[in-house]
Image 1 (spheres, rainbow, N blue to C red):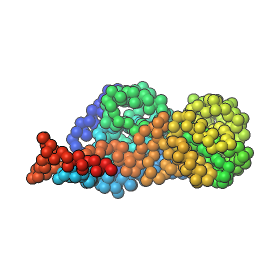
Image 2: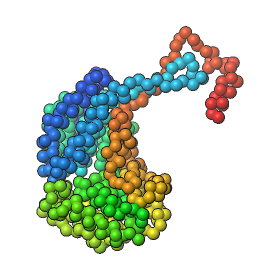
Image 3: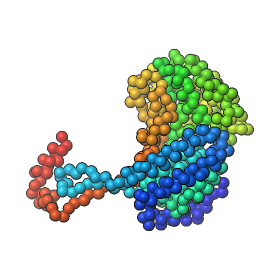
Image 4: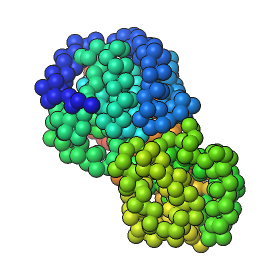
Length: 463
């Protein structure tokens, strides 16, 4: 993939600033039409995108549609039906001390934005934020990952075919291109990637005080308590770890098993893997492969950090790695330091849930938290820890509900999106107070003759 030149990046940034200044994107009907164009473009390019996902990641059409294309259709459809409502001026109540004024919130577009996406879900993590940008009335420069070149090339053709570049444009390249992009001023940067890339972007944009939405990641714990339904837990956890071959920012990263059920869970996990992949994963067209050689080498190095009790086979030539359970893993082992981002599951055990709480709270805040067991105990664990999102007796699925926010906290990110929150992420909520001129109360003016009454009103409202 050829790097976009610094001169071309400068040209696109300026073009989009000039276009936004015309005010064209502020028209809500125009935005709605652009969303419809987006939807039609996605239909046109759906097959090439799915073909490219297979080429780069060995991702089946079914998984590509469910985890990538289908999610984007859903976001676009909801935005088309609701953008008029989201963008509407909202009247708010006004306290007596501000009467006879009226109060409003006006949601206005932030302006020119940059959207940077990773390789693991290269379609939906680039295009879902774009739905928010379009619905809010922003322009957008898109930067896909160079690690999935076929997908990035098709995305470029799709964007060029669907939008004018002064409105939505795409740039390509490696980290050097990221550095060039981050030199420019934007009104919002929306970045999905690693915490290290998030820090680089924040440092570069700090001089502009650019607001940012960062969707990063981290080591999301998966706790299986002694009261859990082991067959259901094993099936859902195996599915969650096999989805995209574990290369998912909210994949369950490591297992915390109650010591009384460890052996039973391991056996149940093996059985459920067999139901998901009756003929194994190596030749399955429903199992994603590792993205590149360096990622494979990193994952393979983790296999020595514990005793392999399930899986463990791999083939660098076709970048295949079997779902693997590692027992006897030390808390200080390399596999427990960074997000795994692959189909390896280190196992630790606990006797009391307080041990899990202490461990989770001693680490960086994760993007997701998963608990299997009694619902009341799940709520108790959630109340004693923190994470971007959480599931009780499930994994991954909280991302599928657009009615609840998706985002990180602390090291796992900042800000959230999906549905109306995507619109809000790219918007500024502007406060407006409208005051008539026919009535002009004297109480706010010097020499404050009615101060006693105003003081009483303010103190009463605080009770």
